[in-house]
Length: 311
Image (cartoon, rainbow, N blue to C red):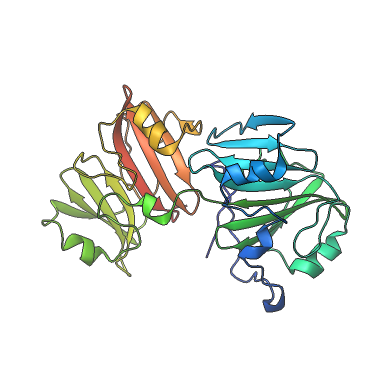
């Protein structure tokens, strides 16, 4: 899988060269992202029962769905939508990862324990749900196991921070709109629909074809025929969480959380051959998939859902 560097969802999404693989003996698994008594995705009430009252509590600066509970030795990040443990920020050398890495260890030890990272670098501002900048002279190494991320931050040759977090809180089904499903064969979706009004090749990349219906567009790959994007203005379709065109901003926030990552205007997102200007702002979710809600006058007017295939 390819990952591209973007702050679109306030979560660092990374594009690694396919030649970069973690050695088989060092392959990390889901279990590598837990600490004793603390498991990512566990109910946050159980986290509080384990850790007790925090020193302080702070919302993430860009996305208020995520709240950091600050303790002496770590920060536990809560996903407000699911009320689960989203991320762990280890801040004490007394805490070790499952493989035995602690703050103050050498970078060479980190790579002996975890192998070669899928990505490394120092030119980024944020990593995961964390509200502070990671800037030079600090350096980061990233390891992945599905949606789970391990970030090891170092200065010179010494590990200064270890971050563990889940990249996405949306499930795969949350990027579908009704029976319109990303990655599904277009022929199976089209079988449930009348003939489209027209079909158009994406002008900037003929590898994508748009099937235009009265109130939505379905984009597919020209070669494989799989659905890569959904462009919906039709109120008869409902998202996995029960949202429809015409619903209020308040309902969006109730179903998806109060998200501050919004933009006022852009010309194109995903494989779309026309700009969309009839909106006030767009609220963006996602990483390797994107779900974007366009609103105007306090109402939802458009939904875009697409796989991160553009650029």
